[in-house]
Image (cartoon, rainbow, N blue to C red):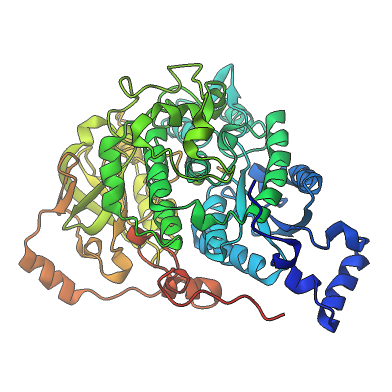
Length: 577
Ligand code: FES
Ligand code: MG
């Protein structure tokens, strides 16, 4: 280790070292908590941003795991300072955690800025906690390690493995079609979430923790360890030990997150069969690091990188626990060969290539090779056209291939309740060729892009045996969702994007190979409709939601707040003490 910092040049020394009244207050108040001077003076002080709460089942173990992190920090000669941060439970927080991702990002940045800390451990895992914590920590720029919560154990229903989200949707469709009894439904409910940890499908949580690892922000292999495995405890204390060294080495995020590591993260996302949500978060995280990642970069990577992880919902069979036993993310990254730049630095102090040395795959069906992929292209494709001039996202591998080229009439809904009433109407006049459209659900209109994009298949079609149809929205969908859903249409309808001009019966055409999504309407007619368009009212009239709608960007640039973007203004100064 090359020591670049000394006790005198630690950031926290500004609070504690000077012989003045203010510093005396800081010392005396630390002693008030029972600590002797020698326990922290001159040592790296490590913030642990812990997103534990009673309302987040995915992070239930963080209440105890944080003690393992502290143990590691103390062993390495640092001093831990646990700082609770917004928990953002995907299961409970309404209308959507995405409304609060940027709030967590602001909180993470300001917690680090305002406290006497030299480095940070970020404890997250449930969907938006990963990008929220990472975005804020990138902007602050202190040495940091991400500690992923780890996936929960696989679900179990009558001896069959159950996957978070994905199987809930499937079972619910069966229930709506009258094929599953109440007793069977309740049994599935009790079996699908068997331990703490985040969703164990390749949903947004598993995708984002894999991305954090591919960016170099976790210890090698950390993102694949199941939450309930004792390896997760040992990894937590190792994180504590490592962050103390990183402070002395001054290994800051800008030395880790580079254009090359961002492209590695994109390739890994594609190869895992990632959640569509990965797009918005990758764009936002990269831009915080000053790297201008675009939707076109993502589409390029998608065309080059096949899906290797045979994990539901993109893969057919396995879950994250199987992925871990098969060798986990290191095995997958090793198989990506030249698609990754191995020279990039990671929080371990080693290059990615060094951390992949000796990585082995123990099950070639769970982690496929490049010549036998789950899907020949990456997880996601980016569409453009007169319906989405700035782009939209689709997950081709997770939809029925007959929709890869499709043309049909639009059935348009302006709100979720309006759509809900229609899909529950057994006499709805709809054909399997129809294209269901939901608008007013984008970053500003939602607000916060709720996960409404997997519009339910209308009962009228379910009863005829149909399970997929083409759907379009400016919303997102859950990472555990599937189907022919075009999402994140940008610009969104609320700001006058072309989606706002669509009418029932207009013909929509999808051509996946050409990456096009168009409505077959003349430019003159579109101009007429645009002239008559009236901007809808914002849904939230005060407070955070009001501010959100005024400052959030569009999906194609990551839906960050304008004033948090790296390009907005000068770097925030260190606080006066
Ligand atoms: Fe927490 Fe899915 S609900 S990760
Ligand atoms: Mg989710």
